[in-house]
Image (cartoon, rainbow, N blue to C red; front, side, top):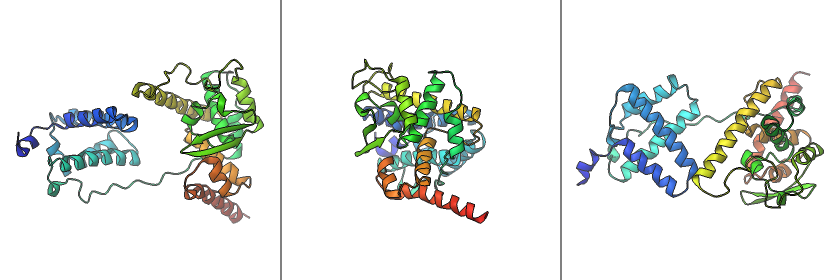
Length: 308
């Protein structure tokens, strides 16, 4: 089949399926999952609009503009989530241009502005943190475990949810956590509150390669898409749980586990830890990322001074 005829035979769904299959073979889990979600959203939109067998070549400017409106008004997606959806469409279009399915001159996204908004850093102040840490919860329930992990992160280097889940006995020597994230070796002294959390779940019969916290004991430990998808499911449960716990603790902020990372950083700086030290503790490759927290603390100080 020559190129010209091929242009009018490639359906968008089939094209997306081939991309998703490639991500699966390459074990690019994030792309695999996000493009599956994008395909589902595009299919739902086409079904609602009565569009059947949309061709890749029919990804024109009008379709994309109408789809963006649908995501905003009907699906109520956030601004940045919509930007991500449009970026994935842009990747589809660029791939189609490269494969001569869409002419470069017909690029529907030429001069189409896709600009992410900078996310607001959400963190807990000291009172909110204490309220959450001391909230009465049924001992060793999943809710209790996820709250303990959140508090542990707030105290110990702002560990990300997956880093918390993957902590092993070999990482813990009784006083310090010794871990490597993003190629950076981190030695984190464990405060008393977090030592109590560890002792709560400690099992002396465990091997050094066993996990420190009982989160993923039933999860198959391999690098398959299925295992990694289950791990992502655990993270979603953790985020859902901590949001509900925060409400019970009287916190009105939109909490997720990344909030614990931000909370550790702002607490550390407010207690006098230098930015250069915080960079090592939190595991930032670029110190500019760490300075974002210093700017928050400086702004808080300015606000307090304005009230004097």
